[in-house]
Image (cartoon, rainbow, N blue to C red; front, top):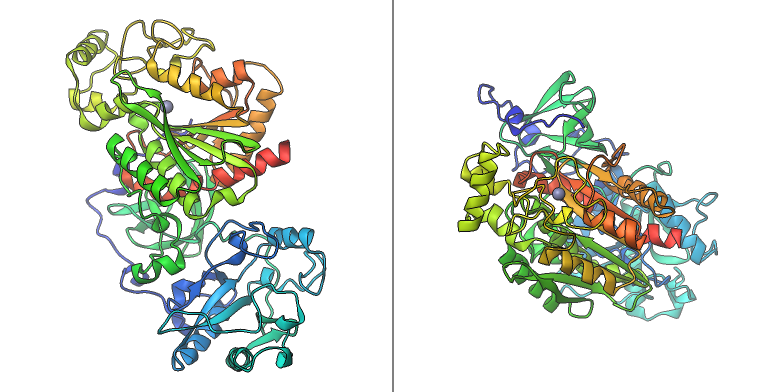
Length: 601
Ligand SMILES: [Zn+2]
């Protein structure tokens, strides 16, 4: 395992910050010629044209295919195209009108998905031989709305109408619809776009860019240092590698890819690695149009707040709020009660009778409570973006399997028997921590049982097993002796789960092996590779010494493909600033798991 880079590396007090001019939060980039951005660069349209609205039809089922084609919700186009579109918006503003974008950049994979459903070159460009203007980042599908009322103007047809009404011969539509379509056409053409004869809503930049098959709009491109002072840009993904540059707080850089605990980035023409802890996406959403933009990443959430100490009470409150707001897709119940009689809630997103059932649990180790926050954030996000649009799936998310332990870690309070556990751990030299630090780092349940060592798969056989209740590493008097392990067992047996995912912290690594049964080990490895493809977490090279965990039991006894995902870079409990990169690296695990299940059934 790579050594942990402690936060002190980024907060060295002796260095004077030398912020670059672009780092000022007030310096919102505008499409002027001196931005230093090349015309071919992909940018988020609403970042530069905040007056536009976007509702990407192919990010929903609300399109002719009836299926979700891609899973990003923000429009991206080439910067050169955005400059032209900004001129369009400026001119329309004078007429009291705005633009609503239905589609922009489309990955080649999305073009392929459309072609698979509609192999007709009149309406879908061939994914290999066609012009594929949307895959070039210069095409936009759009309509007009009234800036005063917010209402869309009457147009010749709906989006993706394949009838003759949609074409640019407007003789078969109302005078009003024809006039509006002509107005859009006139302004778009004036500023360098050309229309498509069969679709009034489609415009392509006259300048044609190459088809891009690498850009992934679901990952933000521009990030900034979110540290106290600076982060180090290193030559390789290693905390001892040569420092190429210091990136000061607020300075921006381009994310290239994730690699374990690191992000590979480009900063001032230098490519290197930074720890992914203290960075965040650099754009912000104007709250005035957030509902229209539907937000981006964490900005999309309105229920789950960004906190480094997500409490049991907040979780219960937020689960109720999510289930009220999204009552048609989200339900909650208790999987059982903890030793201290707290309900352990599950949030069920989707149909319990769906073909595919997925269990995701976190917070089984108390100090790893950022996993509870993450699972709740993912639950809200995918309620907003309706993950149940994907056919036949149901997610069972248990954000906090160990609520009593989380309360100990967050409040620092020990009862008299827990105090005795602390005294005993000190006596046996298991800890030299102060009581405050000891409680913060608590992993076990209220009775000092490590729930993730309380399952019957190699139970009691771990080399570092403790013999008495402790803050960690004690497996209990027998498998399933803890109320929490029983609750997880009973709930897991209630459904026919396709996969289980356990969230832990930290390490930015994925564990996927246990024992030697097949095909469950091979399938778990394949699932782990899928998780890696979206998160950039690395696969553990061996399953190591641990057994008796939840994942070990479901693999060994139930044969369910399963992985353990260790989020974060620093030591648990994690720093709040890690949550930005953690969210971006994990939110796609849910749709990716669906994709994996469907391709492996
Ligand atoms: Zn853990």
